Amino acid sequence: MARACLTSTNTVQGTLRAYNALMPYPEMLVAPMRQDLVRGGVEELRTAADVDAAVSHTSGTLMIVVNSVCGCAAGKARPGVLHSLEHPLRPDRVVTVFAGADIEATDRARGYFTGYPPSSPSIGLLKDGKLVFMLERRQIENRDADQIAAILTSAYDEFCQPAPTSV
Image (tube, rainbow, N blue to C red; front, side):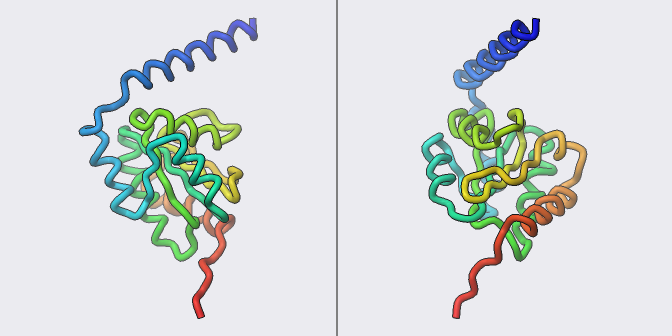
């Protein structure tokens, strides 16, 4: 019975992934939502290769934001991320993928979030390519942007190093 459920769950996830790959959100819908983060200095990744390159070529900390069209992304996650980036201690690199639009990039990013089911919005912090902190949708949807920023800055304080000072 458990095997049948596992197979059924895998089949449903595979079907949803195939559907999403065929029916991504229209670019004219997601473009303004992409720009919310890009205008704030977050680097956009559109392909799986972009995600792999970001992970493999970033020494130190990399924050990956899985952006979304949902209301909790618009009113909570995106503003919370941007507010958190005003903190003096922050990740070495901050990137974003867009769930429902950049399907392969999002799937690849989620592949680095080991031990966590796919959710969007979500935010993962990697240190030297390994996940060290995760903020899932369920932790985002019941908080406001300031609370999300506070959670993220606590993670920065724990996992990020100060930027080197020039002499």
